[in-house]
Every structure is written in C-alpha cells, then in structure tokens.
Image 1 (cartoon, rainbow, N blue to C red):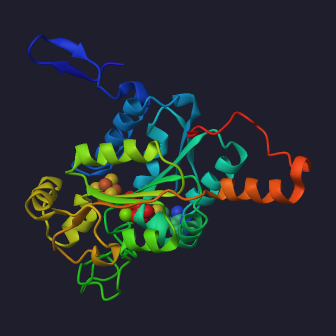
Image 2 (cartoon, rainbow, N blue to C red; image 1 turned 90 degrees about the vertical axis):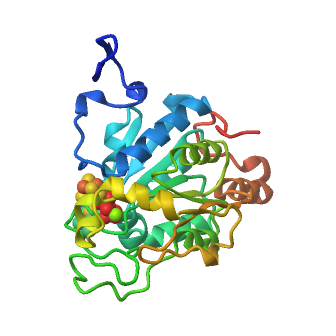
Length: 299
Ligand SMILES: Cc1ncc(C[n+]2csc(CCOP(=O)(O)OP(=O)(O)O)c2C)c(N)n1
Ligand code: SF4
Ligand SMILES: [Mg+2]
C-alpha cells in the first residue's frame, strides 16, 4: 500500500515499516505528536533487523491508547482486557514456547491494574519481552492519575498536583527479578530500536520502558506544550547512564530522565526451571507440553 508521495520525483512511496503494519487500518487513532507511533516504528525496525521469523512473533496489548498497538501490527496480535496483557501472554508462551511473545502496553495497564501480573512475571523470569509506553498518565480515559505520574504533576484527578509517590519502573522490574531492564525516551529512537533488537535475542523477562509524550492530556494539563516540546525537553535534559543502579533512576516532574540499559543478566527462565524440575522428578515419564518445535532463542 502506498502512503506518501516523494516530492522530488512525484513517485508514490511505501512507508518503510508498511510490510509490518496493517495499513488498511491507517489513519490510526493516536493524536498528533503522541509518542506511541514512535515506539511502534522502533519495534517494527528492531523486528526486521533481528531476522526473526515473523510467523513466530506475537504481540499482546491491554487497554488504553498504548493498548491499540497490537491492532496495527501485521503480526499475530491480541488486544486483551485492561491489565491482563501479561497473564494472556504468559498463557501464550507456556502453550507455544517457540513463539517470541511481546507485550506492548501502557503504564496504567501494565503497572496500575496489571501491576500484580507484572511483578510476578518478572519474579518468575517468564520468557516475555515487555515494552511499556510510559506517558505518566491514563491517556485514553481522560488523563487520570497513574502510578507513574510524577510528584507534583497535574492530572484530571489530581488538579492541584499529584501527592502519591510514583513507581520507579526500572527498579520495580529489576527488584522483582527481570533479567533485562532498559529505559529510553521517544527521542532516542536508535537506542530504543537497538535495545528492543538486543532484547529480542535474549531470554527471560525483558523490560523496556519507553517514555512517550502525551500532548493531549499529560502535557496539556501540565502546560508543557506539544510533542515537539517534549522532544526538546528530552534532548536537553535526558542523561544516558548505562549500568546505573536502578534505585537511582526515579523520575521527578520535569527533571532529567535517566536512560540506559540498567540490567542484563541471564538466568533460568520459568520454563527452564519447570522442565528441569519435572525431568528430575519424573525422568522419562515427563513429556513437555506440545508443540515441541523447540525454543526460538535456543543457543
Ligand atoms: C477493568 C477496566 N477498568 C478500567 C478501564 C478503563 N480504562 C481503559 S484504558 C485505562 C487507562 C489506560 O492507561 P495507560 O495504560 O497508561 O494507557 P494510555 O492510554 O496512557 O496509553 C483505563 C483506566 C477498563 N477499560 N477496564
Ligand atoms: S490521549 Fe495522549 S496517549 Fe492517547 S493518543 Fe492522545 S496523545 Fe497519545
Ligand atoms: Mg499511560
């Protein structure tokens, strides 16, 4: 499908990620200068570069503006109920271990209503790639306070500023047991893409926080300007500190956002431990669940 015209030669051109997108659903629902589309582009580019078999990739989203991502990718995609992307993805991975199962969803979805599932999936080191789009607010439902809203930031339910301490997401993931933890903003498209590509090639619970502008709610309620102003803010203030102690990467209102890869430690996944356990206990009597296509990430 063609989506734009090259002004120099008047030739119709295809968007570079079009083969991975459901172009028949474009235009998408996201507001102008929202950061969600940037994360989709980074994910699509990372998938293409990784060379994984796209028939073995699935994307699971919950509910919210970020929860619409699965619907725009030309992959096996699942738009699940609010907060249940991780349990859905868990069932998918356990039943079809050869798949690369990616969860892409919002901060409210994954660590608000879905927070319990998030920490237990990390604790079990489930073999999931989780990309959390953090716009510091519940975008889709009108800008309510989220568990990520920085102290002092305004939301529709905290019009005088948030007084609840937010989660430090990399620390939540790392202290719960994630084996890969990184954070980038929508300005860092190359680093975010590399990080996703790197995480695709790894095993276990891999968590990437993508900080994204929500100009319509978070920025408007806080008088922060457009998505472009958010990019300028990330550009002027974000600090890259690979290997930083996750206890020190919490986000304060309009203070520098610390980005980087913070954790990269391979350890046995839930399925590794389960197979070892039952093989030891039951010997030849243990038959792993079908299908037996082998692990996508086999070394
Ligand atoms: C069980 C249930 N509770 C509440 C809602 C309403 N709801 C839909 S999306 C959403 C918040 C989404 O926030 P987030 O995940 O941060 O996504 P964003 O829109 O910011 O990308 C809420 C509360 C719902 N759909 N289902
Ligand atoms: S409300 Fe915010 S998060 Fe939702 S599409 Fe608009 S800008 Fe993006
Ligand atoms: Mg949100």
